[in-house]
Every structure is written in C-alpha cells, then in structure tokens.
Image (cartoon, rainbow, N blue to C red; front, side, top):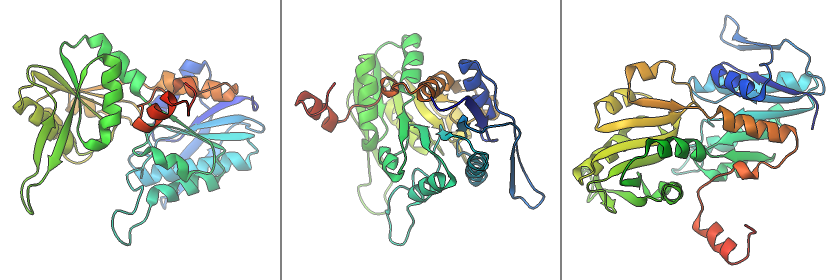
Length: 331
C-alpha cells in the first residue's frame, strides 16, 4: 500500500470516475481542469496529494488531443505535488490503431503516446481492451491490461438468446470471438472480407453456419460502423434470424449513428469506456454497460498490493494454450 488512495479525473469521462469512486466508497479528488483563453490546458490540484497513491481516470477519447494533454498535465501536476505513486487509468487508449508502420514514412503514434505518458511521471498504467495487445510493450512501466469480456458476457447471458452464434467481423478478431463463444457454449463464425480484383466491390463471405440463428458480432471498437453494419447485413443475407453486436469502445464518429440506426442490427452493446454524450438518444439501438466495478476492483487491488491477474478474463491464444498444455505456463 503506497499512501492514501486518491482518485482524480480530467474532462474526458468524469461520470465513469464518479462511478468508480462510488464502487470504492471514496470521493473524487478536487482539481481544476480547464483551459486558458488561448486554448492551453490549465490544471490545478486543489487538495494535498503528498505521499498519496493517486489514480487518474482519463480516456483519450474525443477531443482526443485535449484529453491526452489533460492527462499528461494532470500527471505532471501530481508528480510536482509529491504524490508517491501515480497510476494512469486509461479505459480507452487513443492512437492505438497507429501501432506499426503499415506504409513508408508514417509514425508509430501509439509508441510516442506511451513515451509521453511515461515521461510525464506515470508509475503504472491500467487500461482496457487495447486495439493491439502488443502496445503493452511500448511502455517501460507496469501495464495492467483488463478486458471487458466479463461485463459483456454477463449481459449476453442474462438475455438468454437462443441458437446464438458468435461472429468475428475479421480474421484479427477470431481469438476474441472464440473465447466469447467458448464461455457462452455457442458456435463460432468468421467473416472473410476480400476483393476479387482491383476497383471491385469488397465481398463478404461467412465461414460457419448462421442460418436460422441469432448472430452476435464481436469487436473491440466501433468507429464509423461500416464494417459492423456490412457484417450484420452479410449475416442476414446468409439466413441469420437476428443480429446483435457488442464492443468495448464506442468511438462512433462520422456516419456511425445513422448507419447503425438504419441497419438490420437489433442492438449494439457498448461499455462506458467512452461517454456516449447523448448519442443513445439519437440512436436508440445503443445499450451501454458500465465497466466501473471492474476498474474499481482493479484499482483497489493495485492500491492494496493484491494480485490483479484473476481479473484478466481474456481471449486465449493458440500459443498460450499450447504452452499451458505442454507445461510451459502454469495454469
């Protein structure tokens, strides 16, 4: 235990921070986080944090750059105020899709953001459903990587959906979908997207049987909703009775809300890693679940120096399964 538990928040998602505080039975720390007339971020910590074990809850969501700068400046202010340990709680890690050089002369922005967070004075990072798990390796400080899987599983289980098949919208999400399907004792299907030739329309083939079943499309995030909506229609075209979708991060930019509302999707299940800010009024198909208890429990365990590993309900990869079965990794 590293001093008194204290929780602060920027302006990205204060509602989630308040929910976490309610779970922990504490109050949100007093801080002024705003901007000067020229747009520069202004931060002042309004209470004593000397020797404290401080957690800063801040998703790097829209406006992404303001949210990121708020996080960095809050951390710097806490460090200069003699906080004993600072943990950045980042439910949604922005820039995560820029995790590699996929073209010549482009940056690896996720690595740059990780360096900035570390350099600002962060001692530890707590995040959820990174777009690429390898981003944990961009940090030279401890990273606790949680998954929203138990929250989504609990909701889906309570719906008692009959003849459920879990569908991965692309090859990259197969491990996530397989883990979900295994725990729901459901079948698995995969959408294979390809173009037959240059300048030809993308064709979506479904590997697996969805005919007459309830399909659940599972992804880590929904941005413009193009992939999810096209995938849902492909399931209907192959005979699915209904289509749901679930994701952790509701980025929802551009035409996303219109696309979802006009689509064949029955419901879009998301978490509050990113605030909806009234989008559920525009698009009633959205249903938001809270990750506050999961994050709150992780914060409690980190503060009390307890193991967090039991909260890592995560997709099982072929390599980790083979290692465990072969004795390489203890179960």
